[in-house]
Length: 108
Image (cartoon, rainbow, N blue to C red; front, side, top):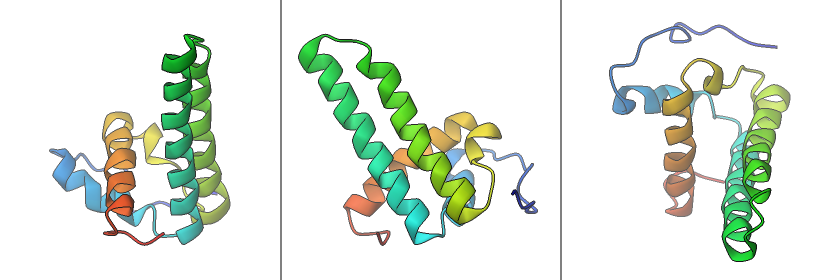
């Protein structure tokens, strides 16, 4: 289900080096849509936790975000999520891509 790329095990000196790789791992439109939906769900779950004081919304946020993203990777991208290789940069990439989609820099 995974495909190896020449950058799969590459070390990235910084996020600026990583982000083009991250985007290459999110080339499928449906996968990007699922990532976007998952990120919106994360925002909604965090908002619910704050609004209600029910902190079980926080684990729901994690499940929502990763659930939608991983479906996108396994069903549409046919690759292994970068979360497993580069967890911090991957999380940062999710939110930069979300922002870029909201700004119209990346198509949805």
